[in-house]
Amino acid sequence: MESFTYIVLAVLAVLALIGTGAVVLVRRRRPELPPVPEREQITAADESPESPATPASPEPAPHEIPESIPGRMQRLRARLAGSGGFGRAVLSVLSRGDLTEADWEEIEDTLLTSDLGLEVTTSLMEELRTQAKVLGTSDPEAIRAVLRAELLRLVDPTMDRSLNLTRPAPTEGFTGEGAPAAAVLMVGVNGTGKTTTCGKLARVLLAQEHSVVMGAADTFRAAAAEQLTTWGERVGVAVVRSEKEGADPASVAFDAAQEAAAQGVDVVLVDTAGRLQNKAGLMDELGKIKRVMEKIAPVGEILLVLDATTGQNGMRQAQVFSEAVGVTGIVLTKMDGTAKGGIVVSVQRELGVPVKFVGLGEGADDLAPFDPEGFVDALLA
Image: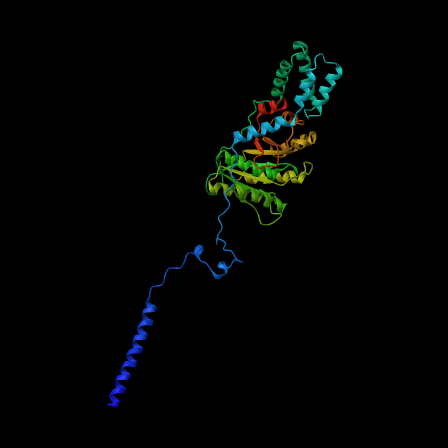
């Protein structure tokens, strides 16, 4: 009987062990729950008040939306009108009545100090003297109309101020991918704001619904490439640059044009290093950049960036750059006042090319296509 009892107990013990094993097996076979998505995972550190939760991957900052062209032109005209100009000073003298010789000398001095140049000033003085005798000087509005007409004639609204953004046919021998983009080369001396102007021009083109790639061919200043890259990130434009300081700028310009063709964008903007106009080697380098880019397609625009406050020194710069690379248009920066606005007239007469853009400040949208009538009206506001 005793043995029978032991047998029964042994059987019960075995059954108990089997039952425990079955439970473990079931637990192991339970399907695993899907992992919690990364953004929803919470750790003990996250729950701690000293360690607040942070998103795993923050949303990228949105690109800035450029101001529309009509909007920026209206704003810039208002700023010009409020800054005062030589036209207003001349008009105030003409409106005095019977003018003395001292009055005429005051007008002449005002025109000369506004960077109109001697030839233009002499021509304008002759016309004003003649019209003052014909009309008399007792009617300010009549004199204002004469002065406006003369200034507008000098600024010349008939000049074509549009950018040549027609995408050219590839140069014979070009084996890259895609169709070439319209190429715009930015040139000028140090300190005129070329790199900033390049970024601002990209915004203008984006506002006109053009796609853009920029090339950082100023390889002598690491800060220039960084600055252009920042502009690219700001507006959502790709920037082609070399990581090696002092790299061949012509090679970077070529790569930018090639990348623009491969991406199928409309325009490639190439920023170049500032250079003094009396350095022949550096000026020759500009010619090389242009020639290398034209292995892909012709360069449609070469914009000379001039500081409007440099006066007649800027005229000499313009002449040398035009001889070196064939300037097609002028961008006048730092025109945050119109007192020296005669540079518009003198540079156009000297080079035979138009002022195409004007910049009036440090703001991202403080660059707009030059408006002759708006500019003259601002002088006389």
